[in-house]
Length: 245
Image 1 (cartoon, one colour):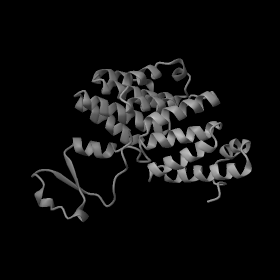
Image 2 (cartoon, rainbow, N blue to C red; image 1 turned 90 degrees about the vertical axis):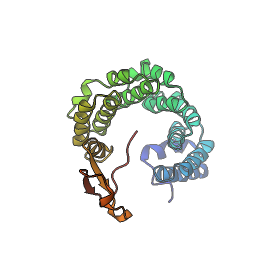
Image 3 (cartoon, helix red, strand yellow; image 1 turned 60 degrees about the vertical axis):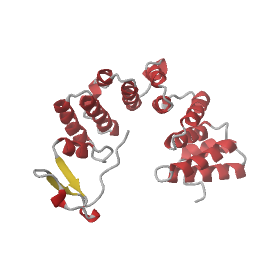
Image 4 (cartoon, helix red, strand yellow; image 1 turned 180 degrees about the vertical axis):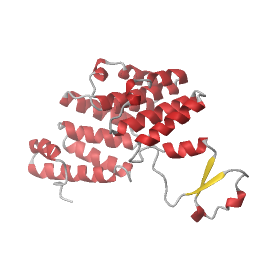
């Protein structure tokens, strides 16, 4: 690990630093990226070490904010992402900032960010993510039907080959289920599963649950005979995909 593993844009942004410092910052960023999914707390420590050495580089502050978010350090994440936005003039991570507000127990602020002029200028993918966050904030406030309405948009029927299609449909199905609209929820979990070639959601598992199918890991030693009569059994040779929030 040398630091040269970073994307070209990040390496270019580090050229404003002294050579030795840039090398150290690059190594911290590489480690943060490698550990983000498996060990977010250690990734956070590496990203913050990079930010302490390169506090005037927007991409470094952004990386620190994302690592803090992954580690559940929402106050720090907001601070770092706001700093990155001020430096770069970019607001593409506004949905992450809104979700940080939710994490801090401030859903009203998340909704306000979703309605901001900056949010209206986001690209399509980021606007969809903002809808998902705003719907979650509505549910935080107990406004389940409002969450359903928030997610009702033309993008639900998009034929685009993009990750946000499955995520949006999944969020909509989950909101419908929370609102007691079970049959509609099943339809949209099916559509989410159809769009989810990469296994970003657990739409298939949710569909199985709603259909009364029970998944059993036979390696765990669970006795199928202990299941309630009439339930279907599906043997999972490997774990399903992680649920995305």
